[in-house]
Image (cartoon, rainbow, N blue to C red; front, side, top):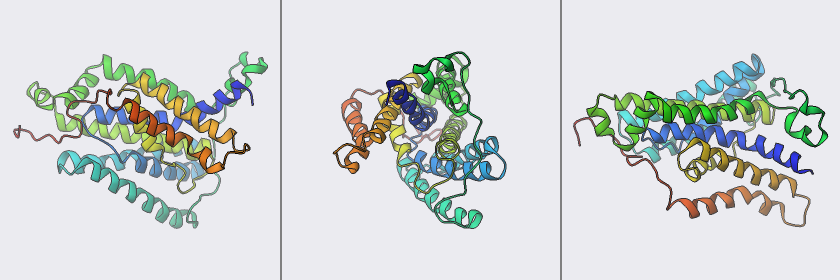
Length: 303
C-alpha cells in the first residue's frame, strides 16, 4: 500500500472521531460533560440508515443529526434543568441508545442487527489532480461529508473564538455566575451547546452508516464516541487540536486494518487505536486545561 492510500484511509477513518470531538467541544465549553456522545452516534447511525434507505443520503444525514440532537436534549434536560450527575446521565443514554436502535431496527427493517444497503452520496474527484497517479487515492472518491468535516474545523474555531455566541458559550463553562451577572442566559447556552454537540455526533453516526459501510450494523460505532472525547482532551478543547488528534486516531485505525496479514495476532492489531487512546490520555490529561466549571451544575442564586 502506498503512503497516499494510507493517508486517504486515515482521513476517512478520522471523520467520525473528528465530527464527534467538535460536538464535544461545544458541549464541554458550555460546562456540560457529555459521556453520552457514543449513544448519540449510535442513534445517528440508525436514523441515518433509515433516512438513507427510504429517502436518500441527504435525508439520512438530516435524520441522523436530529436524532442525535434529540438525545442531547434529553441529556440537557437531565443535567441542566434537573441537575442529575452528568456522567450518570451520559451512561444511561448510551444504554438507552443501544437498546432503542435494536428495537427500532426490528420494527422497521425486520432484522435485529443490520439494515439493508442504503443510498450513498455521489463521490467527488478534484479535477486536474485526479490525473496525478500518486495523488489519486487522496483526490478521487471523496465523500462530501469528509469535506463537511474538514470545513467544520475552521468554522468551529471561528464560532468559538470570534463570535459573541462563542464568547458567551465559553463564559458559561468558565464562570457561569459571572456570565449570569452580565446577562447571559446560562441555562439556554448550556442547552444550545449540548444540542449542537448531539447534532455533530448524529452527523458522525450518519457518516458511518451512509458513507463508511453503506448500511446500519449494530455496534458499528465501536467506542468512537469515547475516542472522540479523548481526541478533544488531547486537542485541549480546541477545534484545530482535536482535528490533529482525530487524524492520529484515524491513522492508527487505518494501520490496524492494513497489518492484519502479519504474524501479529489480529486481536492485538485491533487494539492499537484503543491503546493509543489510553496512552494519549495518560500523557496529556495532567496538562490539559479543561473549562473551569466543566461538569458543575449551575443554580441561579445558589452560589
